Amino acid sequence: GEKKNLSPKKKQKMAKVQEKKDNKTKKAQKKKKWSKARTGETLNNLSYINPNKFKALKKDIGKSRYITYFSLSNRAGVNVSIAKKILRDFEAEGLIQPVSTHSTFKLYIPASKADSASVMKN
Image 1 (tube, rainbow, N blue to C red):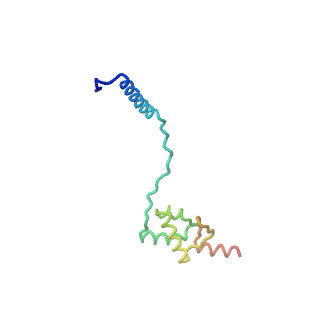
Image 2: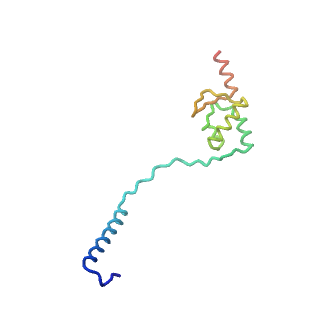
Image 3: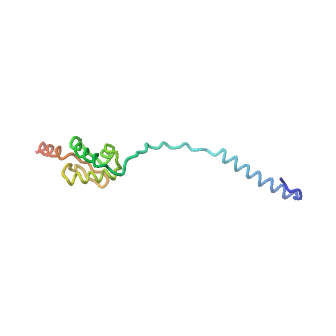
């Protein structure tokens, strides 16, 4: 409770302080709550690839029309960084050939289709 021996000025001052506190809590209650922005679907891709999946990808890579980091990442269910490494391995083995290369985007086609495309051009 309140102390009985307070001067009237002290009581007024305490009342003002209390009023300010009440105003702050009212403002906090009235404060606009921004709607949460829609967030994209979170992917739970793996940060590794098991050997069986790798062999299956190696077999199916020739059936694709084109291959990008993202398309391989979606198909294999792995992170894009892992997809980049897989594509580098496939390129080194001669399974795929780069069509368009850029520091941020690479487009590959299967080597079998690249051979037939070069024959068609000539």
